[in-house]
Length: 137
Image (cartoon, rainbow, N blue to C red; front, side):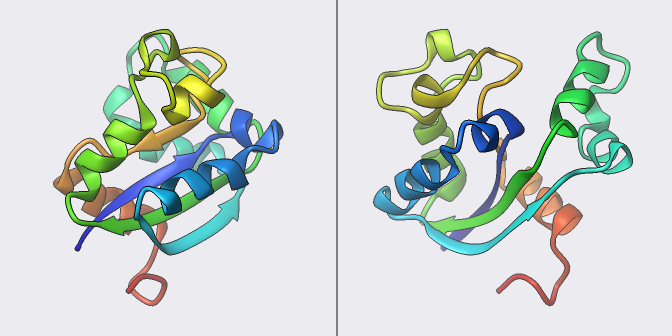
């Protein structure tokens, strides 16, 4: 089983659709290995999105990700990274396939309801960023 990392972003939490999103993952065969609800600090958000530092949208992204609580998840399934990317849909919800998380719950490209790792290497790094060895299986 492969693991991947996901975030249910503040806009989805505020709209009270986190449970619906989690149900979509479970119905798609993902195991919820770990989950926690937190409000990210500015330093945590800046560190997590460090690869985007210097880009025009960085400040807005950090502000959004610290605007309210998020759910951090470790998901497991065969080919979890690819399966989750498919289930999430395109980054821009206008281009997302019908029935995907972003098509159903995103508000815009910037407030697109969920984050998911884009590779196995990113998943490992992102999981380590938010979960210590005692929190994950």
